[in-house]
Length: 234
Ligand code: DC
Image 1 (spheres, helix red, strand yellow):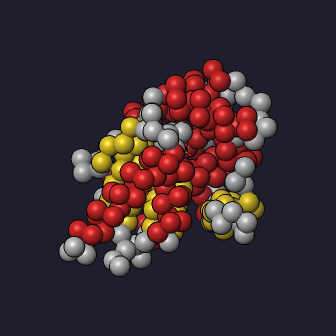
Image 2: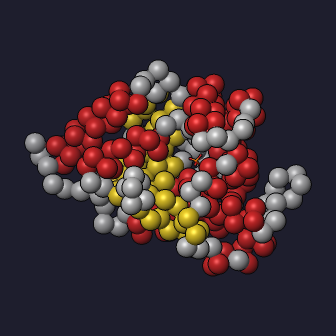
């Protein structure tokens, strides 16, 4: 069967990665979480003290050390899920902390960081057979993707989901802080100068505010089937 590129974009914490991961596993595609790559760069900056007190990132330092930041993925032998690695160290849990979440937007707005990561992402999809989720996959990374989805849900519902996820992992967090972080990231993601978050004209819109995981999974599989059937001339 012909392999395609599936681009899943949308707001933070709206369950993109869960649906993208599940679909990739089911159809035997590679799954790439591009948000994890921006998060890994952010973790590197935090560890090196490259944030000013006003939250901005020291771009000169970052630019000088860009070649020292190597991001890769390895498969968890138990869950068969990809784990993010930074210079060989597994940082999957560290990059999901609220500290990284609150610093990632300014890093993701830096042009040379985006250029580096977009180049890596395009190389990962050169053979197709890939599900990639992020903010600019259908618009900048793979504008030619055969299937593009743009996912959204209300800020309140997304904050609740992130709160449940973090408290479920034993992290002590406040719902109000998370809601503030979600709204702030929406604002920065949509208004940044380089590749702002926007729906590609040919992307399908999915508002999953009131869908269960099983429902959105079924919806996505249906869209995938439609595209591959059409590509195979069925
Ligand atoms: O999906 P996420 O919350 O893990 O993404 C983390 C941040 O990275 C988010 O604030 C926006 C940014 N991002 C981006 O700018 N482009 C992408 N392709 C993926 C994520």
